[in-house]
Image (cartoon, rainbow, N blue to C red; front, side, top):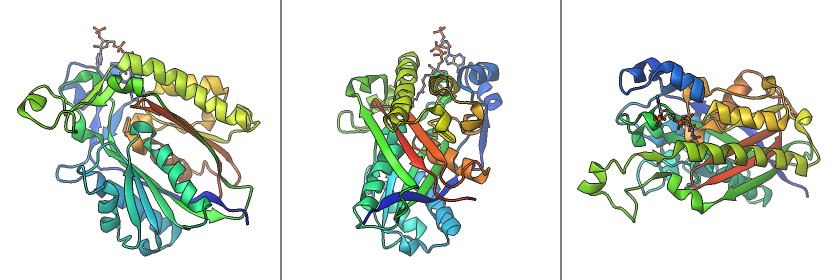
Length: 332
Ligand code: COA
């Protein structure tokens, strides 16, 4: 019998503390105007000290259970996409399982930087399609403030903290659900966007700390060029593969790294801005969380209806990039 996976609920969690462009002007040599015009970002959320990625992710999972009206004990698997795990091991997924009360779920992490959520979503979808599972939670969560150097104006203006999650369930309805994924990697891009130390190559030492190697390093210009071309390409390719054009799309939810990267993709797709979910001005780049966070806000704002053709597209460190096409399954 035909079985597809569909998103049956979407939720998010963002910390209360707001770090504005004005605040950053007092921390590094920058201006709110520069940040806004070059990136589209006005403010971002920062998680309090003593809390970690798993705390935000667990809140998103609890919110999803409330929205869907299920007990966390009904969840069978939790997949967490993140580049800021609480610690190397156990996985953040394990900590989320405990903190959200989903004690019957197995759990693990996926590392694909800003593309992590789409990679994790593709894995969760396979469990549902295989017919072995009926409730998988896929989370994208990052505490980017933990790896951001607030003395480096090139990177500290870009990132924020957040978590978003979706619940995947099976359906017999061929008109709804996940249609396709296109995922790509190019390891030659590794050197342009990375967190150099703390792994097996450069374990923590006085030298790694003194050199700021535990913070994000990015060659912004190079990453920007690659991101603009690849995100637009993969967004267009997936809709054309299925015989659609931009006109058929009801909502495009792009990774929120830079408004100018989103603009370039929107132009290539030939769609109007009222079909694009943008919230980068409020949250900045929350890495694995951007797409589920934007999807959750889109749903709250009534932008998603049953049978709507929805496109996700992303680009991130690795390099990794990808797109997902789906038909939304339920009205608000
Ligand atoms: N405030 C003021 N000036 C800044 C600044 C800041 N916060 N950050 C950088 N600058 C300066 C640079 O030092 C540079 O000065 P210089 O010419 O004297 O060396 C100047 O602004 C221009 O830098 P440039 O890199 O050309 O800016 P840009 O238009 O490319 O914007 C980014 C910089 C980082 C916003 C942009 O490159 C970007 O978004 N890159 C991709 C980021 C991304 O998507 N990363 C994640 C992938 S998921």
